Amino acid sequence: MQTSQKKSPVLLMAFSLSLLFIVLFALAYILSADIVASASARDTGNFFEVWLPPILVGLAASLVCTGIMFVIKTKRMVPVAFTLLALYYVLGNVLLRILLHDDTLPTLLQVLRLYMLPPVIIGNLLAWIAYRLFYWGRA
Image (cartoon, rainbow, N blue to C red; front, side, top):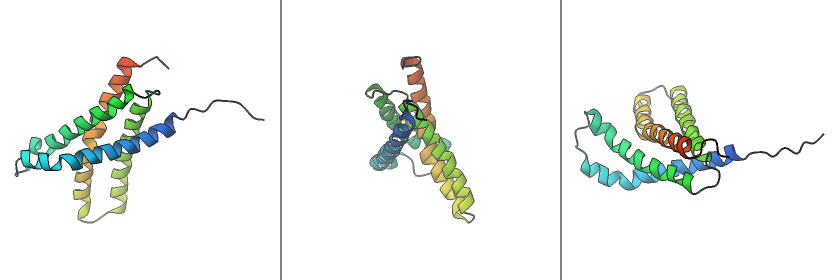
């Protein structure tokens, strides 16, 4: 017996969009590395000296990624893609802890936390707030 239900490709499209977001965040970090390195102090013991550059780059890239919502047809893809990025962060954290048990684990966890956590948090906040404000309740 065959049913004629229409399948929603939102999850597949959000997965693809989340991969694009990873590329955009990586490009944002790569292209702004010289600017951030020259503007920040060399002593990285202070919380703001460590976290402010990735937060600023994450904010700028998250604004660009969230802006995609205003030009695509299926608006909920953007917040779902950011939710998938949060899932990737959790999976990366778990995989690093499972696969590594040597001295590199704390360093790699810090790199993951430093460069992936700001876009995940800021992007999810921006995307879900924008979706809630502008598109909630609309198909």
